[in-house]
Image (tube, rainbow, N blue to C red; front, side, top):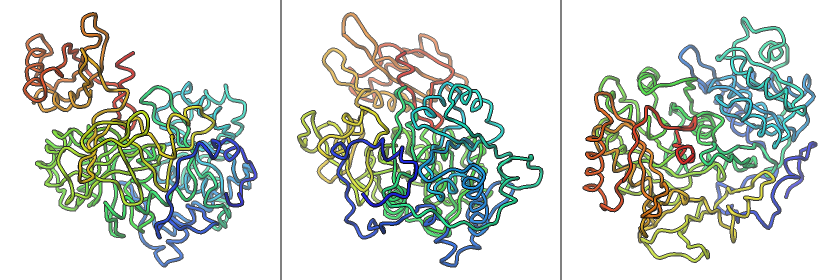
Length: 542
């Protein structure tokens, strides 16, 4: 490790023991970062210093700001954090807000000060915020005033959270800001701040998993990890250029959103459109209105947007990225037919910060996610970590420049073995290195001796014209041990009766091996999902 800039050493002190870390692959030229590195300085200050200060970086429906304007606001916020709140490098700061310029500025300022950002999903309640605050030992928070109620309720149960400072509006303007708000305090500060002299392996952020298992974990990422996620997938698969305009739905609190909605465009000197809330229709309208070129969202959104594509001018759009949950082939083909764009699918994880398997549109092979992103390595292994032959399903093992370092969590030993990150996914790899997703390892259903991947049954159900959403789990059965049960949301105009049950069962039998069909089907108005769109199968099981 390099000499840390952290005065508050909590984050470094609670990294897992080095012998439990994965192997890190940092040999590529683009990953040879200097010993002293502050990723916010690289993303923002370096872009201004390179002569691009007048380029637009953040956009909303109401306004936009340049890199130079963002730098001034970030520096003012830095002074508030250091001078008014007296925070020292290494202190953890909870960030709570929608995708807005002020949320982006707060994240950048926190990192630039050498503090540790702990971004949280906007919809979390007090009971969900408390364990995050307690586990990360958060002492200060920056929060959108519209979301402060739940945070204050959490603060009442967390004495270590001593300071909560609100920012009032989404566009970051000072006009009308309440006395004492972050905007008002920042307006009184000089627009210059020298970034903290952090080491490349100082902890920059603690990202908590989005909770598809019901047991979120804190993952710690270094300053170099933030740049590594920007310097591999966006360059080798997306081909980001300075004229790109990014947009999408993943929250900045989710590492998928942090990359796609902020860091990827900033690394290239491009711009990003930040939408506080989006529906499928409003996202399509935003793409057309702002001439967006790259969109990031979950498969559910693409499926819902596809029927409306012809109503909007999407001629500016060159890339559509799907991640966060498995992309059914039916959704991929539906979007491709509607938009003319081949979807860029990707598998990533909070533990590895972003996407590590994907393919550019011209390299897509139907039925697979893609090949390993240059800079990473992946293989399929059995429970003894032996490499399996092509085509045989097993556990996905990955390593690269980023990897799992849980915050004081015994589950580190489960995720990392023999230097490899075990993502908890069942995959197979063909002879050409293309990876095919089967299921989360805990979503494999064993019924009467057959192994059945829940997502495969979901994908088959989604091929039926009456099905809007589907979630599949295994439930106990006296005769077969476990049977496949499907929870289905129907499109308007269709009835969830016994005739529809039989129709869908026969449809699945015709689409995939008949033994995989759902022997039980329950119709629902909605399915439980995280804020990032991931299906929460554990809630269906509960």
